[in-house]
Image (cartoon, rainbow, N blue to C red; front, side, top):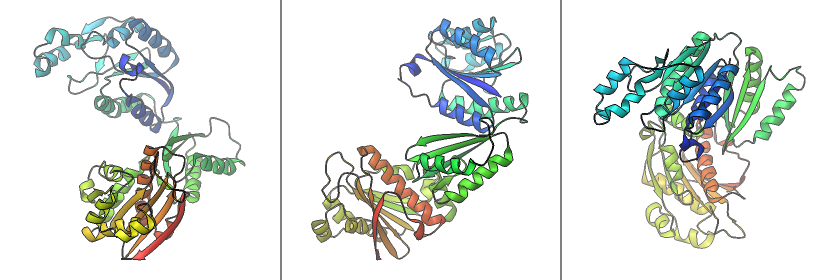
Length: 426
């Protein structure tokens, strides 16, 4: 079933606010088999919103609108919807009472009353009527008008909109969708493999739809089809071919997957960072429940901090430099001496744009990993990237090393950008 998304607000058009609702809406709708054919972002302009709604309401079976439901003068969505569909605005008594009872609007009752004026026939979606949002079942079209506040938008979309869409438009004939995440893999690698795999199939454009979405440094692959058997076969072949690089077949990020694995296996990790400046620790702790697996982290930027806090050998710094196998090994081993953890990581490198040497140019990163009774250090060449990109791919690579070590074994610690490896016992 096909529909459109409409996002309303001057702040979206001007770039003042990042529209995260578009990501949530497209992800959730597509994963439930509903096709989004158009996405429109328009300012708080009554005539413009009205014009777009009149056009889209004719073309599609459902619309999801977001924004412009507040009490201020620039919140025009209710009026625009009413005008577009030829409906009157009618005061919803229950919403009006909820606003009257709300302490939030104690000193602005007259202005806030505007939020209770809905197009006739509108059915509020939220159980808590102080949250805006409603449904219009208009001429066999479902029109959902949701608030722009991200957490409210996501709640109403997942808890109200999707169930109502599924009731109206039965699952028969809807597209099935699968989203996979990969790391250390180019989208061109996936494209080439799928072209070769599917060359003997007689398919038209509607049988199988494949989308490549770089969420750098990850790659997201979305496969859609109405044919469950074909979809399952394609996914199975992808899993066989790219097993080690496959992070998730449930559209989970590498950060989320590693966090879940550490919790499931009861493992703990601690880190010491130089060129990444705490980014790895920040990623590890961005997942709910990270206190179960993240022990502590150090940002040891200077030679003195590496020696004082981690026990990095002065002679190693003097002989090999701060960006070297020896220092990465010392950092990871030093973390392991400080705390009792299953995995200890040390990162040192040149993120740029300055620094670097002829032997170790900007983009050179060494990642040390201590586990069991050994410590390994890998040399990576992340050349041609900006400073933040070097920091990000270094942090993600360290996370992926944990993932592969937990799921497989050390023989799978092989990467496209790895230039070498050294190890020692500890």
